[in-house]
Length: 366
Image (cartoon, rainbow, N blue to C red; front, side):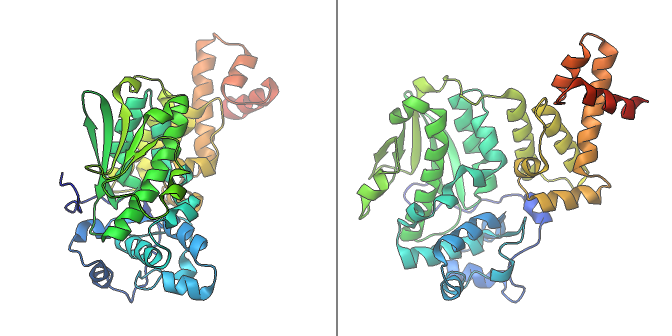
């Protein structure tokens, strides 16, 4: 992987957001946005990315209609459609938006836009990383699937005699100021995840930037609990190898497996939507005895609640019947085994009491 400059383009398969409506104006051709980036990475620039990033940016920096119009200039993004749930846009549009903000607010703008680097925007990636068995597994998960949520960067896992590293580089052409700003946003997101995973050991991790400290670096450093190094060889997040075997405080094998499954589905979408119902069923089953809510299910598969409802409807299904089906099948298995009391079975399926469970059984089995 080249150091000190943009990486060559990498093709990302379409992700689940291709189900959702586009926010880009039909009168703006993709080539016009790409020209604004002075790049030829056509595959990477066309990769869909969640509109949530653009929505958070416009809300943070577009205080007036004039501000918002200026931010969206050249992006092809329709302002009136920006709040459309489940919307997506090509990477090129998001990168132009970030470039506009960088020109207006400087390289440290991510410090004023906490929502952009919040872990809540990462969907199944955040769940998969947090619930990995160990810190080493979390790093491997982040390196493997980081581009599913942020296709404007690419990640590479490195292991040395003393450390485990994620090296991050741009997947599309960016000028120096823009890449510094994007890298800062990415580093803040990485820090937000690992400050919770590493807990008291976060001070042993290091974020490395391959450029000198920016003006106002003291402001930047206030946001990190880990060590920060400038003038490094590459943009790297590094964790001592000795911490790799440390268990994640949020380790959850079943939930981790389901989140990985959702990420793999995003990477390799099915030719139809029938697989989505199966993914939702497995997520429901993995969360028992806690009941998975529809909103949370949508977040775990990387889409909006409205899009999830619509896609399930296209298969003749809905979230509620899927939940009921999972509970019915689990109840059938437990009743056949005959090893648990009615109270125990009710608790295992998330019912508040045995009476509610009995009523469900009468409805299911007569």
